[in-house]
Image (cartoon, rainbow, N blue to C red; front, side, top):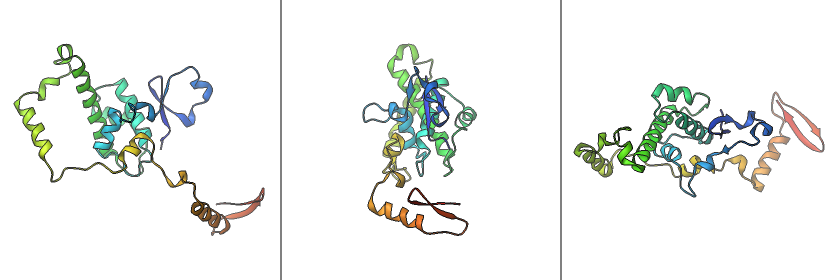
Length: 203
């Protein structure tokens, strides 16, 4: 999985496979750079709204891949979304929600572009298709629907913004005790030895 995906000059790149020398002089955007202060960006919002995450470990990379895709292709088809997101693996298997989130983000970007200049973009981007009475009625019904309405995850903001905390990020005495116990316990198939005064095991 490529949770390390960043944008270099607007193009998705794996940070773990990119030398610092290669990035010198280029614009680098991380998942935090998509936010507007404390507010999530359009792609991040779409991931929260469509619940396009489970454990959240791959989410920052998925968000960055989607951002890069939409910058290059503002109106991708489902097949183009599948291809554009194929470099990021989700072990939880949330691909259906991820693809829907990318579609939602694309629509949000088009809507935002329409609102910037209605006179020139209203018809070009198809903003007026849902602006009639039927569109208003559908929006009103959507606001009042309660049963079956999905709720965002409590920690969706943290996962979409890349600030979620995992066990490895925690520093506490209990954690070090568990790690120490694991290091001292020889499991079948492991070879343990002393190196620089610390016990280390390898499978």
